[in-house]
Length: 507
Image (cartoon, rainbow, N blue to C red; front, side, top):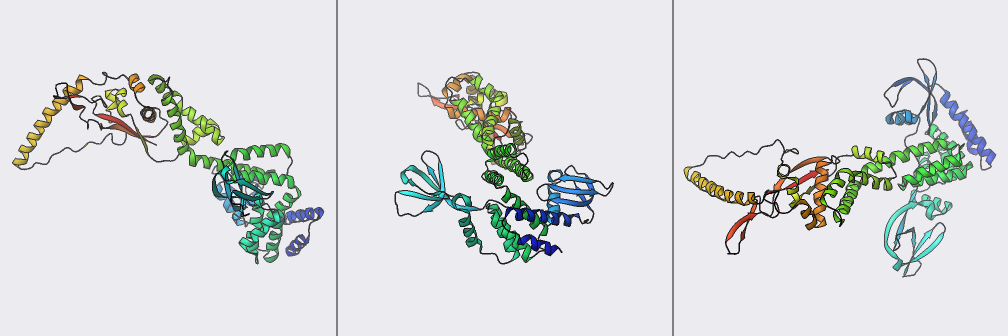
């Protein structure tokens, strides 16, 4: 009986009334099949609760109806009420194993013009050596080569460059004409992704004819869906364009178009598909931002700190105040404009960010601004509790004598260095404001980044510790000649006697 109904449905053709009759018949058959009680099963909800019963209704895009075993009532569950693995399990048990249509992309070239715009199409050799000629669905267009900044390979949806029947011939040439049910199923899915809905319907019908047992539920649901798409062609075109925006990663535009669709077609039969599409857009946008937020955050952080460092009227005190109170919010505000997310959503994603590459920055010659105690603090980071083993193995008498002489000389030199260092320590010489005024923007920016990482709690601080001053080699003083050509020690002009510069590692 079932094969007879399917054969009758497949033989109905183009007139609208016949398509509508086919659609209604197929819906009746599919729900008749699903009305047959299935084996009782346990369904796990997203919140962890378990519901025991029989699935008596199934919709690929919306969810299931479950007749409960405890009270006999029917529970309507949308897919978002269930765990992801449960959705996959339930769909797979009914033949829906992931053959979701995706846009059919074809290779093209992108011409990046000098004015910043991009033109895409198939590159045509028309014999003209001074122009690029592109073929699009609307025809051909030529662009002088001196107007083109660069040429890049890429891909676009097939209907951008081909008319529908041309695209179908291209797909047949690429994949071969299908001869069995699995091949027809693959071509049907590809045609649906390419928005060639008439051809998709023909290939789904061929699957049911060649192998009625192959994914019966999927075929019935897809043919019903395509019947609606063909009847409501204007709505279908808009939903296809929303999906194209999704695959171009134009998430904000996709969501705006979805809202416009709801306002234009409040009673659309494709609202279920639209809801599913919106859910996918939101999920992919979040994943996309999560992948990029670390690199983009640091890129904008660098720009913000650079703006502060190069502002002529900026003073040191104001710069530090901006770093502490404003920079993080400014970075998030910039990110909202490129991701089209709220500051709250971005702040949440930043807090959940993965472990990225380790970065570092140094206070450099401005280490003294922190003050001696903080500048030489070793208590921050994983090295804080470590101590260096300074035990010296005893050697023979001669080695002992050599060591004693070297230690004595080193002690004498250290005394001279200490005298020079203490003569002009941290609070002498340049003031913080003078350092800020006299040093280049790059040094200012490095200092601000190190301070931001160590003191604002916006980044993951890995370690902050002193590093030997490269000017005086951690001696705190350098040897110079005075007016009498005599050598004497003066406090190191870079570390100002601290012997170290402070470096910060973070991510």
